[in-house]
Amino acid sequence: MTPLERRCRRLLRAYPAWYRHQRAGEMLDTLLAANPPGREWPSVRDARALVTGGLRVRGWTWLLSMLWVVIGASGAIYATIAFTHPGYGEGLLMPKNIQWPGEPQVIIDAGVIAEVVWGLLSGPLLVAGFVRLRAWRRRNWLRAAGWAGSWVAGLALMIQAAKWAAAGEYGSTDVLSVGEMAICAAWLMLGAVMTWILAAPAPPRARSVPDKTVTGV
Image (cartoon, rainbow, N blue to C red; front, side, top):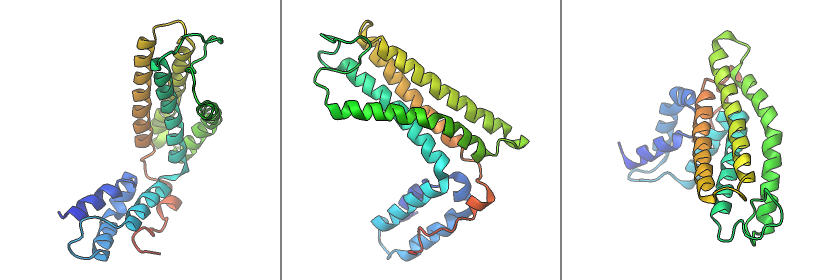
């Protein structure tokens, strides 16, 4: 296997497993044929096309679920930074405030917006997952149940993170920062689980999406 082929195969992992099973060989052959002999890296154009094509095939439900996960994990990272920031908890006027002294206003605003977006996404995301998985069909009930369980787990993680953040002024910030790091790790695991659940073959219409990533169209 040449270096170019190995790197192209890695980029093809942007596509879900069912799509790679159907098209990976054809796409890889086209990529290798379009590059001159001796080349070791795919072009920026090909790499960008493969990644964007993979995201397009994965669909909006996966993209929204990853945004949901990223916001949750980012909140835990934010709390960890706040708890370990020098001067945190000293001279705070408001209880249950996890801002650190001198925190830039842009970070505060971004946190508020992210919290609102996460809440607004939660309900539609649950419904979108059921629709994507065709939950009304009996053979899909197990994956649908897994999706519902993942969604509930996300809510539980956010609630726990909020409780620890509220207790930050009074509890041990060292212990709480470790707890928030554990919540961040749990969010990343949850993202992997949700990706696996959504990796089931898409509906026929989605599977027929023409591939333009390696043809230059």
